[in-house]
Image 1: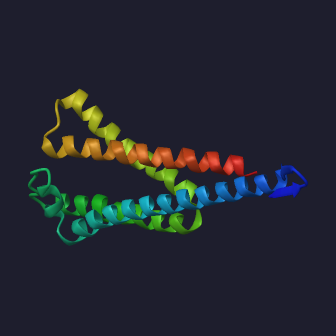
Image 2: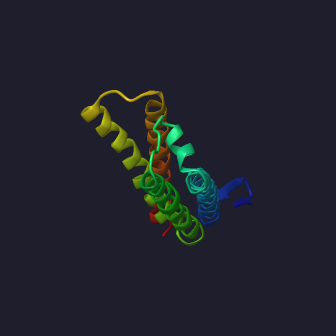
Length: 161
C-alpha cells in the first residue's frame, strides 16, 4: 500500500508481503491444477491399456508382435496389464483426491521404472524396435514431468510455512 504524506511516498511492507503471499498461493494453485491434469492423463492412459487387456489380451500383445498361443498366456496378460493395471489406475484415482504429492511420487517411480526396464533391455538384449524406442522416450518424458512437478510441489509446500 502506498501512503502519501506531503511530498513523500511510502510503501507499506505489510501490503507487499500480502501481495507476495497471494502470488505464491496463485502459483501453488496453478501447479496443483497441472499436477492433477498430469495424474488424470496418466490414469486414463493406463486405464485404456487395462481395459484393452481385459477385453482382448491379444490386442495388447499385437503392439509388440507377440502371439498368445495358450490360455495361460491370455490369463497372464489379462492379469498383469488388465488386473494389475486396474489396481494402479484405482490407486491413482484415490491419490488424485487424497494426496497429489504421493500420486506424483508414485508416477515418478512408475514411469521411471518403465524407462529403466527398457534401458536394461537395450544393454542385455540389444536395441529396441520402433515400439520400444518410441515408448522409452515417452516414459522418460513422463518421468521428468512427474519429477519436476513433485519437486515443485515440495518446494512450494516448504516455502508456504
